[in-house]
Amino acid sequence: MDDPYTKLTTGDKGTVRFVDDIGTIHISWDCGSSLGAVYGVDVITKII
Image (cartoon, rainbow, N blue to C red):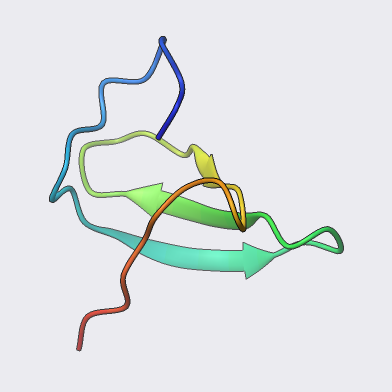
């Protein structure tokens, strides 16, 4: 993620809560953050 204020690191996991009208994927990260991932900018991967 291109956010200088986040403490998220590569490999952090979370739960998708919802996707808004512009495609931002709102995630409750396991580390306690609730930062959204921006479609086409951030890279996230669905894991099973």
